[in-house]
Length: 118
Length: 118
DNA sequence: CGGTATCCTCTACGATACTG
DNA sequence: CAGTATCGTAGAGGATACCG
Image 1 (cartoon, rainbow over the protein chains, first blue to last red):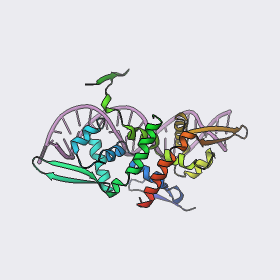
Image 2 (image 1 turned 60 degrees about the vertical axis):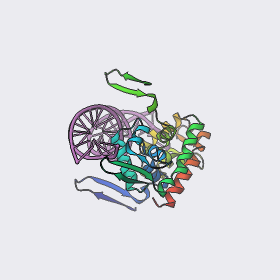
Image 3 (image 1 turned 45 degrees about the horizontal axis):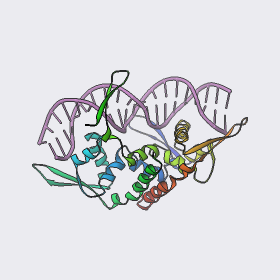
Image 4 (image 1 turned 180 degrees about the vertical axis):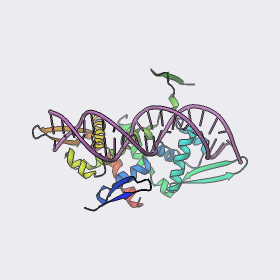
C-alpha cells in the first residue's frame, strides 16, 4: 500500500496514507471553517476595517481569537494588514483578491442558513 | 444593555448578550464546518451509501468520527439513516432535501479550493 | 456489518491582565 | 489603539478493543 509512517522528534508516530489526504472540500473547510474565520472575512467585505471595530462587530469573539484568525488569513493571503499611522497607532485589515473570491461561497452559506432558519 | 448573566449548577457564570449571538454565516459554519462534516455530505450526493463504504471513502476519519458526524447530521435532518436488513445488518445513509440544498455551497467551496490550488 | 466503550492527549478557546 | 502574555479548562478527536 501507498503509505508510510512518519516519526517526529518526540518519537510520536503518524501513519500517512496517500488516499487519506483530505479532498478539496475538506481542505477548503479547514481554511474557512475555523471559529469566527468566515465571519471575519464577511465583515471585511465592504472595505478596510480597524482591529477594534472588527472586535466590536464580532461581539462574542475575544481579541485573542480575532488576532489569531487575522494572522491565519494574512498568512494565507486572504487578508492584508495595513498600518495607517504610529502614535496613535492605527491599523486596518482588508480583503485581497483571494479574500474577495470567497464571498460567493459565504453568500451561498448565509442565504442557506437564513432560508431554512438555521 | 440587552444582556444577562447565566449561572450554571457549578456556579460558573456566563455573560449572554443578544448582540453577541452569532450571525447567519457563523451559524452556518457551525453546522457544516465541523471536521469531516462537509465531506460526509459531499460523499452522499450521488445516493445512499453504507456505513463502511463511507468510512472507506473518508480514509482519514475514524469510525467514531463518522458515526458522530452522521448522528449530528441526522439530528439536523440533513441525512436519513435507513436499515435495509438485520442479520447480516445493513444500513445506508442518504441526504434529505435539506441535505441536498447544501450542495450548492459545497460545490462553490470545492471549485474555489481547486481553482486556487489550496 | 455497524457500531460502542474506554482511555488518553492535545489544543482550541475563554478570561484576565499587561504593554508600547 | 492594537495587540501580547499567561493561565486554566472543556472537549474534540485519535487509538484500540470489544459487541450484537
